[in-house]
Each structure stands twice: as structure tokens, then as C-alpha cells.
Image 1 (cartoon, helix red, strand yellow):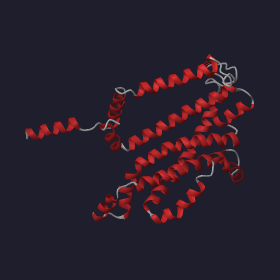
Image 2 (cartoon, helix red, strand yellow):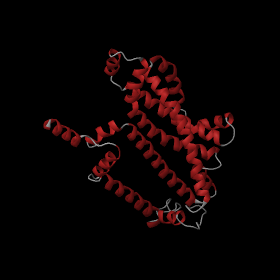
Image 3 (cartoon, one colour):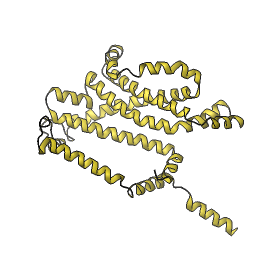
Image 4 (cartoon, helix red, strand yellow):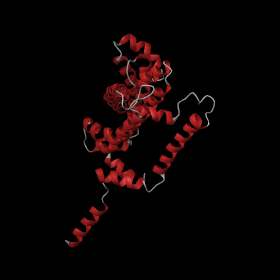
Length: 295
């Protein structure tokens, strides 16, 4: 009895962390490595070089670009010289419009691309039907779709969302299909020997086995959706960060243009973190395994 209790205590003591405890464990472990310090140093170096080229040495061809001091002065000013800052309503409206479009496009691409990729990876017949179509359409640049999207869809919103969805869809579908194809064939044989139905195999083998690839694809997909959205807003938008960037360039106000680019980068980075965090939450078994391996 005493030995069983002791064994139970040892098991609890060595059990891998879960949930928030796992997050704290990974955070603490990351600060014991050079990674976060190198990240901070890299960002600092980039800002220093940016300042040196544009404002410090005023290198030829860079002297027309606003430096970090000029950008920060307007970005955080209640009365910006060139009209855009965190205190202006227009700035937050551009962010809201772009984020709304991305949320819709990403949801559609995920809702269509993930099931499509799962079935393509699982069924050779479905893959033979659909894969050639995807491979034909995928190399076409998003900007090439702009005239067709404007002709097919009414207003400003629908063409922009369509273009962002299209770019994101290809990445999501193909990564999901690759995830299913990467599952060891022995799992399917074992499930079949145990009497599992096709639905049980799909639910308990195909979907969990493909999840790491799915969320890797979704992280890439959200980035692809952002730069496709900006390209679409530059051509067929009336609001949004892409529209802000091109409108600032046309009107020769460079500081709002750089503010729009930096804002886009920050929001894109945050959305990637959100997708990664959701993946970690749904795949805690995978995250625990990586954490115990020191990754």
C-alpha cells in the first residue's frame, strides 16, 4: 500500500505540465536561452540601421524616406503633422476594416480548405479530381485575379475578401493534405484491425494526425491572407491599411505610408501568434512533447 502511494506521488511529480503551467514552463525555459535576447537585439539593430540610413547619415535615396524619429513623432502625436496617428479615428478605422476583411477571408479559407485537404489526403479519388485544378490555379498571381474579381463581385468589400480568401485557401488546403499523407500507414492498418469504421478512422486517426501540419499551414495562410488583402485594397478598396499605404504614396505624404506598413507588420505578427496559440491549445500533447525535448 505504501509502495503504491509512493509510486503515485512519483508519477504526479514527473507528470508533464499542462495548460497555463505548460505556458509558464515554456516561457521560463525560453528566458534561459539566448533566443529572446537575440530577438530584442535584432529589433534594436534594425531600428538603429533604419535611423542611420534615413536620419543619421542621410544616405542618398534614403533621405526621402521618413526615419524612425519622424515616424514615431507623428504616430504617437495627438496632432500629427501628416494627419495619421493613434489618436485619429481614421487610423483605427483602417485597422478595423482590414481586420474584419481578414477575419472573414481567413474563416472562409479555413472552413473550406481544411475539410477539402483532409478528404484529398484521405481519398485518392478525391485528390485525383481536385489536385490538378488547385495546381493549375495556384501559380496565378493574386493581382491577376483583380480584374476578374471586380467584374464578378459587386462593391468594394466582396472583391477584396475574395482575393484574400483565394490566396489563403491554397496554402491551407495543400498543407492539410500533406499532413494527412504524412501519417504512418500502420495507424490505418491498426485501426482497421480493431474494427474501426471509416468515420472512426477519419475522426481519430486522420484529423489528429494532420493537426500539426494544419496549424503550420494556418500560420502561413494568415500571412498570405494579409499581403493578398493589402494588394487587393490598393487596387479595389476605399478603406483599410493597403488603401492607406497607396493613398499616402499618391498624395506624397510618406509618414502615414510608413505608419501603415509598420501597423500591418505588427498586426500580422499578432494574428500569427493567435493562430499559433490556438494550435498549441488544441494540440497540448504535441506541445508537451516539444517542451520536454527542449524545443
